[in-house]
Image (cartoon, rainbow, N blue to C red):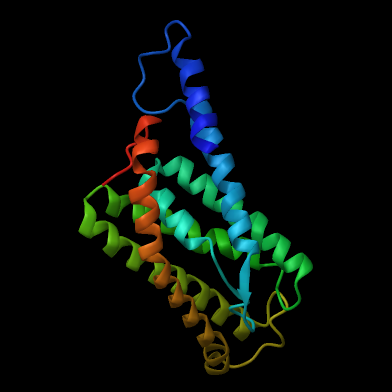
Length: 208
């Protein structure tokens, strides 16, 4: 469905006079891909395994946005990941108990830079792609851990009363469970392998 919709936009734009002097997909196509994948990432964030705070959950979406970072351009991947993650996590904290209102913003803080890391790795080749996915997951984990450590220590955003830095560190240490997202890397690589021809037909670099 995504391929049919995006190819229709691509062909429509290509038929317009004076519209053939561009490299890569048009903005309308990028917007369509970003919108579709934002919805998929939001759904993948909502469909999650619940865990105690501050981790709150393990979601299905890392496989999607890690793959998208390698299949599309940076703008499309960052936009889809940031919007989809925010919407999905906003739903989670609104309708599931145990979440903090800061969590949707934390998703952007943690996930958007992941896209830039993976896009960099994808531009350098296969081995670098896998390495960059590992580094991106480490960054995500540290982004959650360091912010939660500060929130517990200072007692911000519903994280309780202010406490010592050591107590805050201990409370935030469960964020390292996020490293479980490494298990999604093989899934992301499978998605890249399967979807790469379609993305290339749409004009995306789809590296490696």
